[in-house]
Amino acid sequence: MKLNFPPSPRPEHIAESDWNNWTWQLRHSLKSKADFEKSFQLSDNELAAFSEGAELFNIRTTPYYASLAKDEGDSIRQILMPQKFEIEEGSQQMLDPLGERKNNPAPRVIHRYSDRVLFLITDICSVYCRFCTRKHFTGQEQAFIRNEEYEKALEYIKTHPGIREVILSGGDPLTVSDGQLDRVLGDLRAIDHVEIIRIGSRMPVVCPMRITDDLVKILKKHKPVFLMSHFNHPNELTAEAAAGLEKLVDNGVPVMNQMVLLNGINNHPALVQALNRRLLFLRVKPYYMFQCDPSQGTDHLRTSIEDSLEIQKELWGHLSGLAMPNLSVDIPDGGGKTYLVPNFETARDGNVRFYKGWDGVDAKYVSPAAEKIKKPELHHYLEEWNKLKAAKAPL
Image (cartoon, rainbow, N blue to C red):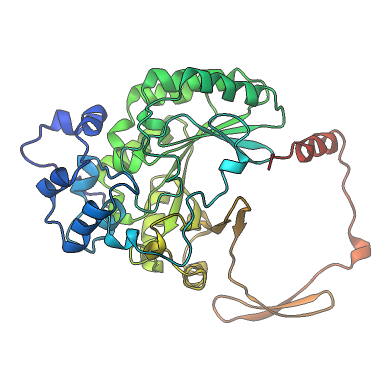
């Protein structure tokens, strides 16, 4: 079956050349209540959020992404539009749910895991998603990291050889100019122990015209660079988004997707499978399916872990492993990610484990006896492993 990706509904009064220009999209972002009222009939719920909650977290969206939203209750509209629920007290409200401030050993560097760091090169996003986990940082309108902070961050990465991977984040790293991005990637690639660079970005979702030929050349120049996209709903996969993703993978840039389960938006197996099958068709690997973090104003958007596990279990026998994301929760206050997996084990008896599969099949698995387990020859790989474990992230 040939999957269909419809084009975005470009307003007739906007020239196609403008609509397909990413800098035009950013310059014409909707930021105020007046901007949004030109495109939407705001509900009382949304009006209350604009008047009472605007100081809590910035409001912005590209014209392109706004064009994908429909009436109140529409999934994409709930992602980009503030609601009065954001200003209500929830069951868990944290300004810094991932404990990033205490894992911040240098300016703009988050070091939670031994072998990798986040490098926050901007605090601007083209769309401020209402479920954002980094509300303590984003939206401060610093387009690119100050030079003093930049040099200190680079020095930290250079002087910690256990760091094998750098993840560019922010804000959204693809909101910076091509020249700035080229500089960052070049400086990181010049550090001998940095093997992998990742870029976490919503731009392929909310402004896919950012994926230009020039951008792709820069990413190829500094390979290996992985692009981590953030599609959350199949309606975000337009013709423009599909073209951007295919341009990336056609040019050797691996793309992996991280979605967030959102209450009343995408928390149903039919939506998850539709999104992930379409992504896989475009050669994008579904990577993570996250629980929504308990950041301020997100209580109404969070699903229960029980609900999420039911979705994962329903998908288990009906979705290719290639399209199956890892269900994960980020343990609050800096505890790191933990996978959530449906439990198919029904009993244990010594080294025998009993299971009931997704389709109801009962069977047992007999583990080899402990005395039969041998350690392989390790050669120099053991030294490499011990060095990696010794490079502990700071608390």
